[in-house]
Image 1 (cartoon, rainbow, N blue to C red):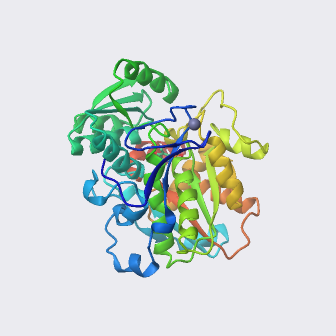
Image 2 (image 1 turned 180 degrees about the vertical axis):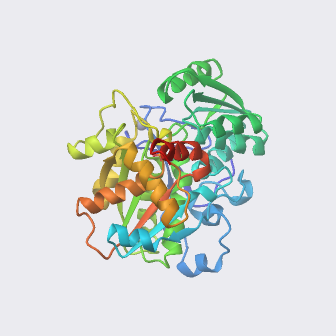
Image 3 (image 1 turned 90 degrees about the vertical axis):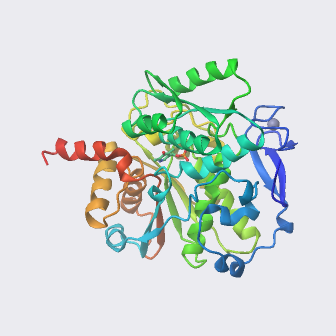
Length: 397
Ligand SMILES: *Cc1c(COP(=O)(O)O)cnc(C)c1O
Ligand SMILES: [Zn+2]
């Protein structure tokens, strides 16, 4: 296995055991806990000047803080997405500045590419011939794309309600697609059953592979650099399984540890009121969520009724001084349209939970008037353009 010099291995979030990344591929062999890549931070010599001098040419520019070297990566130069100022949104929210981190500008149109460049690189390094996962849609499309690039076969299990573009593009990339009647949990069960018969397939599922949150760390590195090392006061994130939120939480601590930044932002999880297990746990001051019984939201990317990493998500919200907010689908879709009409930016319907959540936080008087707030647009508006258009038609427009 080809690894970077400071990468140490994989640490179990539950029992604390350390594992050799060359041998252990997924969950903790002791306790099935989530594994997290670790580094010898003292050996990483990375300054602001070093990073400022590098071209802004994709997330692998942070290779010292990733497990594999850029030269060994399965990459399409994903990442280094724009951080777009949104002055009219800042006025409306009553804060100093708002920026949208536009992850729609990734190779397959979502931030799922950041997780998959790493997870498929790992699959390749482990000598896998196939990757597999169940997904609400965007991760499946990313898996098919990166597998194609690595010359691996992909097996993607999608619920019937996945977006058309996801299904179409899994086919276009040559993936083997299984569409399951029902929701993400049904697709998950179908995937597990097939994987039990094919245990040499490499799973790129969230928090099953140790590398998806690791790839998403880079969103935060970029935000800090794009704001000239002035850490934003708050980041609002459309939260399903919490992979990106946890990644950014980890990244913020790493940058502080390396003395690249002096502070960390407050992290806010935004969910749809139709499936808000993290918000519910937050409100009740719990350390773990209760599964959401009847998920019902049009925001497929964040319809995760049983987010297994919720203790880590809740820790990130607590330790960063942030919070959690749920808004109804109606407000989420309205927010996507408001942003499109006032700022021009095409937010995915799912992603607009971040905008809608920021509005709700303004109503809840969470902002004091001068902060810098970053909203994550996790996917391009094109992924869900039909949903946004139908919402207008529902209003007779
Ligand atoms: C997957 C996805 C999310 C949720 O991501 P997590 O990190 O698992 O919470 C949000 N938005 C979009 C568009 C997604 O595809
Ligand atoms: Zn363990």
